[in-house]
Every structure is written in structure tokens, then in C-alpha cells.
Length: 351
Ligand SMILES: Cc1cc2nc3c(=O)[nH]c(=O)nc-3n(C[C@H](O)[C@H](O)[C@H](O)COP(=O)(O)O)c2cc1C
Image (cartoon, helix red, strand yellow):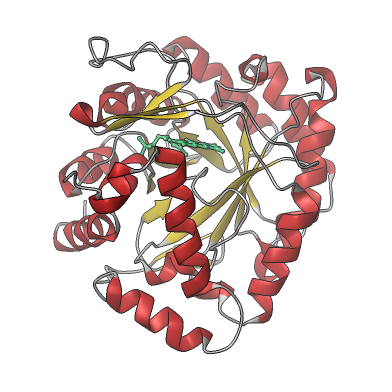
């Protein structure tokens, strides 16, 4: 049996849908929510031990490990993540209009490296449906247990010249629920999206957001972050930092998935098109993070993501310059045990 148990025998997207359905049942607004959340927390191994909470952007992060974007794209299980021990959660990528994403299959497991390749292509319920879910979650009074990030993107058929309108529309509608908004210009699965990952591209989007009267959670402007790919050269990172600072962004998430195939090239599915995630991504993600930290000094907040698979890697990422961390792939292989392990490890040896 794989470490995923029964879910490991299912096609990865079906396993994901099954897990999300279970979390929706456990953490969806409705009768006995408090009880259900308590049971979920217990089933997941009870509360993660809390290190000293981190205070950032006017919010309390119970610990520094967050859920990365893409797992709860449509805010279907937004109340579950605090019960599973995460210190914050990022929903999305959300696009303005609903869209289906690429044809299936579009997620592939590379179990020998505990990695994934995905070419989801932003399947999204769209901003209206996501807003309705966030409003229902907020109405329970349970949404504020952990800070929420909202990751925003553009529809596939929106031209890059008009992309800022898409980012602005989603940010406007959803920022009232967000501690931070993340501008995603680094998914490899929307044709041309990474062309926006340039100083001009990110400035056009960040300027639109800076001009808008965004209202965040707790009545303050949400912080605006940019999520970058691990495939940007070091010289390019400096220019992105300058662009972000010029437009008042708060920081970066480093990184998204890679189109390179480090370490996995002999795996049968390595030739599948899409972004690679999990441990083979760790070196490139760490080097992008360190490059951003060198360029930004202490002027920006950095969230480290990409191949974090345990407390050791989490600590290394903090040493490389991260303020906060996120996981996706290792969580899908290991489940809530991983969240506990990392949160406990960070508590024992704060960096
Ligand atoms: C199936 C899948 C879907 C993803 N979808 C998104 C997304 O919609 N938006 C985004 O910014 N990142 C998305 N990501 C990237 C993750 O948020 C994360 O940056 C990346 O996987 C590296 O972290 P990891 O090695 O812990 O998975 C996705 C990743 C996977 C595996």
C-alpha cells in the first residue's frame, strides 16, 4: 500500500476530489460545525503544537506553515485547514469567470520521488461562486482562526495586455476576506502567463491593485504578494524585486512549479507536460528564495514553497530567507501528519 493509503490507488485527481469531499462534509457551514471541526482536528491528530504566533499584516499566524495555492482552489473546505494544523491557508487560483481548465488526466504522480507533475490550467469556479463560499464561511464566525490568502489569476482567453483587469476584478471582489492577495504570474499551464513575470508585466498588475481601494480582512488593506516561478534567472529576480518595491507590493511567494525536470528525468511520467512539484523542486525553489532575499534585504516578506517535505527542509528554507512557508505536494503524500511534524519541528528549534 502506498503512503497515501486507499487514496493512493485512485487516479490523483479523483483522490483529490475524494479528500476534498470528506473535508467539505467535515468543515462545511451547517449544523454541528464546531463539533465537526473538533472531530476533524482529533482525526488529524489533534491540534498542532503552536510555536510563538507570528504577527504580520495585522494578523496572528498560529504557526508559520501554510497550505499552498491550488489545493483548495474554490474555497470548498476553507474552514478545514485550521483544524488540520495549518498556520494560514491560501485559496485559489481564482479567475474572474468560471473555466474548466485543461482536459484530464492533468495530474501525475511520480511516487519514486514523492513528486507531482500537473497541468491543471486554472480550473476555477470563478470569483462569484468563490465569494459566495467565503461569505458562508465567514458567517459561521470560524473563518478567522487562521489568516487567509487569496491567489488571483486571469482567464485563459484574456489577452496579457488586458490581464490586469482580471487580477483587479478578482482582488476587488475577494479581498475583504483576505489577509493577503497573491498575484499568480508563474503557473506554467496557462499559455503566455509567464510572459507577465517581467518587471513591466508585474508592474501593470501591481499598479492597478495599488490604485484600487482594496479592503482586506480586519478593515485594513490586504498585503499584495507576487508568486514567482523557480525558472527565473538570478539577474531577473533583482529586477522583479525593484518592480515590486516600486509598486508597493509586500513580498513574494517563491516558488510555483518548474517546467524543468531535475532528478526525475528517468521516471516514466517525467515527459508529461506541466509543472513539477515536490522534493525535486527544492534546490531551485531555495535558490530563487535566497536570490530574492539577497536582492530585497529586509524590505519584503518572503513565503517559501517548493519541495518542503519535513521539519529539516522547513528550517533550511527559513535559513534561506523565508518568513513563512507553504506546502502542497508533500501534504498530498503524507497528510496532516506532515503539518504536525513541521509545526512541532519549528517550535522546538526556532531559527
Ligand atoms: C496539482 C497542483 C495544482 C496547483 N495549482 C496552483 C494554483 O492554482 N495556483 C498557484 O499559485 N499554485 C498552484 N500550484 C503550485 C503550489 O501552490 C506550489 O507552489 C508548488 O506545488 C510547490 O510546492 P510543493 O513542492 O510543496 O508542492 C499547484 C500545484 C499542484 C501540485
